[in-house]
Image (tube, rainbow, N blue to C red; front, side, top):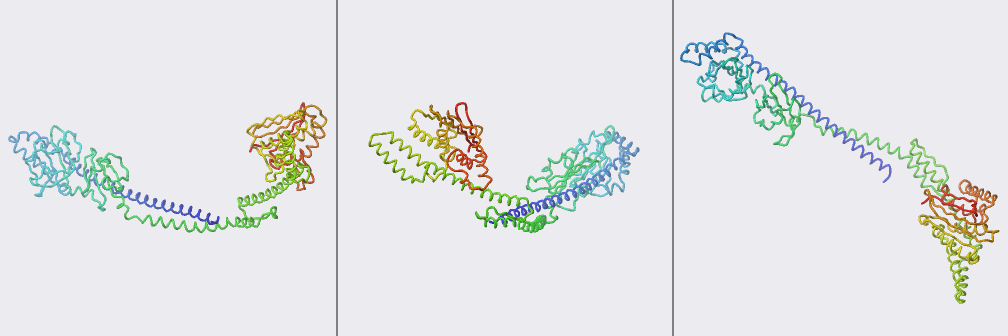
Length: 589
């Protein structure tokens, strides 16, 4: 798959994800706005219902205050509380007192606004505002049987709202249910004033134009004052004590989400719950998912157009660079690459590829030089263009003669020399491990000791951790040979060579020390100059190193090591107290 296709698909996936995300976010926004609108509507409805409720309660309270503000009426009620204790002795006074109170209750205001207004004391009925037959009072009702009487007794003149209950004063057989506001007349058992409102009229206060909205009104003590028809108020019992707020709760029975508004009357303390199924509350809202899909499409299509043109623009320089790469050959590695782009990354990529080509060209030149040095090493080792197979055959002849004459030394010499020739003339590998180099050098020293006997010795101390490090073949033997040929040139004493390998600070090192005559100062200076010249020739100039570096020796060894390890190479020549030392090494690999 092309890079342009991948980048287009990748950003298309991103654009799709962003578009879907925006669509979902817009859907959530619409839903949240709709819920907020429903809650605001609930708040307005709740405030209207509570205002209506407070208005009606105030009307009922005003009736009680109107009666209690009439001093003559209050005096009459007080006298009746005394006379009705002994009714046979005060029959006429009781009849006149009740008639007096009834006249006060029998007003157009009471008749039009309330089902009934009743005044009674602990001895029984006193008076009521009732003219219609269905509202006539059963005067024989026993006050002690009224179920809510204990609730209002001792309330010290406070208005007490009684929830829906059967009409306690209705004639026998009446099924009328009413709501009552009861006020105890302050004094010693003076009685009570009850203002009744029919259940139907009271329900009108909580009537909702939307039948799907359920209404629950709760008194301060948690008693349910009103609940919409078919509503199980106890199902919402946990919400009765919560402060005024808007909620979204799951219905315990249906499992559906419901929107709930909780309000509270500051006048009466009545708490009002408005409840509606969330789906029904939001049935009239716009199709959120359709709008969200529209938003997603409107975002995605322009994004794709932009992505296509941007992918084309961004990948155009890459296409040009790819074509240039396809035309790259050894002959044009160093040709300048020009890609027209303002993008810094593209320019950096072009520069990196250009530098890579330069390094590749440089590496190829170094490889050619390394091949040349390796060939020179092989030629100098053999000292002539002699066929190795011919040498092997000659050594086999000599070894056979030695075995025939029972001379094991000759056989060992031939075997060691054959191993050395095989190692040094093998052109399949140019490099060897330090362990192989040490073995090769020990074989060389064995052959030298045949000539010098006990006059020469080799002491080897090698750190196991560096034995696997790679070096050019025969470098160690060349340094040891150089010590023997030059270090002991004018020395007739015992020749001692110490070969030591160790690691330090992340580098491996090989040290060849001898007890010879050491380096002359002019020789050291001349060698160091040749080292610098060799390094410059290998890494800076493009001159033919074969003409500058001829033969084996320290310069040739330095050049081969330098081609492998470059700047990490350490190569030092120095004189010691008893001879000279050649130290070389590089970073551990």
